[in-house]
Length: 233
Image 1: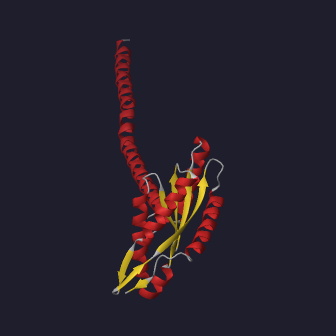
Image 2: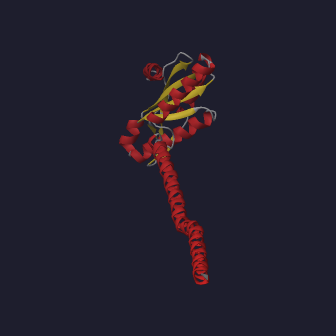
């Protein structure tokens, strides 16, 4: 009877060892799984960081392209698209806060004869000088833009009709006073300005049309004024 008992004891001991081994294996399994998952998690985090960096660079590039699309390449001021966007924003602000302002459309007189006589490089010099003159005459909150060719627009805040007319006359006089030397010739150019008042009830498109029409009326009047000569010796 004792032999079976020894056999049973040995079997029980073996069983305890086997169970302990299984428990140890089971307890070590999560550690092994965690060690396997750790590199995968690190790779995912690196991928996410990389994608975020690329997204940030792409958004920055989109912003740069949008800014370029709204800016005149030569003069580095808003082009028609950019200016119309600024005008629309300004009118929206005026509607919300009951603000006011003025839109001035300004056309450069006799730019085409300068281009024809001295080349487009000379015309570019004239345009750059005009933009520099206009920006010196406005506040930081105002906007100077190029609508195209020899036509400019200015968005001026907090001006009544009297002030707007006075400002337009100042712009005209400042540009009339500019002079240039091309190929030994003294050259001058002028400008004609038209005004549209802005307020809570304004519309960007109609304001541009109104100021443009007023500019052409002004240009017709200036043809009969004794003022600038294109070339003088």
